[in-house]
Amino acid sequence: MGTTCNPRDPPPPLTDSINANIYISQYILLGIVIILTIFGNLLVIISVCHFKQLHTPGNILILSLAVVDFLIGLLVMPFKFSKYVEHCWYFGDTITAIMLCTASIIHLCLISVDRYFAVCHPFRYKNIVTAFVTFIFIVFSWILSAVLGFIIMFLELNIKGIEDQYVNTKCVGSCYLMQNEASGLSSSIFSFYIPGIVMICIYIKIFSVASRQAKAIRDAGHQCHEEQKKRAASNRRETKAAKTLAIVMGVFLVCWVPYFLCNIIDPLLNHVMSPLLIELLDWFGYMNSTFNPLVYGFFYSWFRKALKLIATGKIFQNNSSRTKLIKNSNTFIHFLNQSRLQSAHSCFHSAMQLCWKPAVALAMDKPSSTDTAVVLRRIVPLGGGSLALSTLVWAKDLSKLS
Image 1 (cartoon, rainbow, N blue to C red):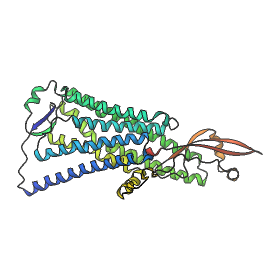
Image 2: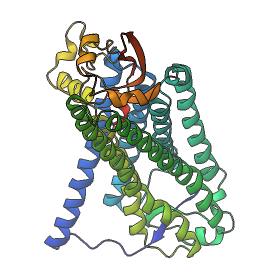
Image 3: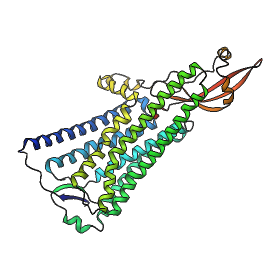
């Protein structure tokens, strides 16, 4: 229908030891990629499904992403891998690859939306991102992906106007999806550019909010030794958040930008790009599904703990599903001791200017995964001319920030 085999010379016989080593290296490398994709995402699926503490709307999105990437490793990569042995695609059209890859990208976009509300609107997060909303997100991603795949493959809109070229190039060789200019542009916009731009804007906003919150701590506590410790911890968390966001976007862009640029440029150049290059860029995109469990899983402390329990077989023990992987995120920081405040009056003197000024404080018993608390400070009279800083805290689990 829309998949074509572009002519090229058959591969040289494997009589030469150098050629043999190259092909064997290809097989080993792609085999490792497939295994990592399948088992990496399978570990994320088992972790989120088994441990009840992880049954949250945000983690359900990560679970759905892992399912999509697992299917890419199971249903798409092995058949694409077979091309390198048989040198052509014998398994029909590529609607499965189109649908699953699009679903994976849309899931990444929806996860960024979830993080936006968790970080930028923490008070409203649980009311906005509910289990029902998460379900709608997931259904939307699958339906949109299926519609795009159906439009491209079954309606054959991708070859409208280039039917003669498509027929003339359908032969044994290197298989790839041939698209006309309109199809290449529209499919790239809906499958990649719109979700990608949304992700970039959201992550810039998230980092901006995190930086502003960290600065609030520095401004409020620059005169106090204890606050300086908080400032140092805040800087470390800010740096970690920046690295995490940079890795998230970096991996996504490196994997998919080259392919979708080629997807637009190749039809404009009358399909002169090397099929081998298109195949290589295609695999770069698939490898985003390999890296997703690393970026969205291994960066979380709860996943490392879950992986340890899975590897040691402890998940088969009774009540293992109730294992506490994340420390209690609903921490309440008690009102500061009155006498301590009076003795440290000079340290908090500048806080008089912070009446009901929002800031962010690091929770005292939080793990390094970054639970934080949103704080409202106000000055209240104690009598005798003394002042105390009343601190009321609503702790919010913003572990998705890093």
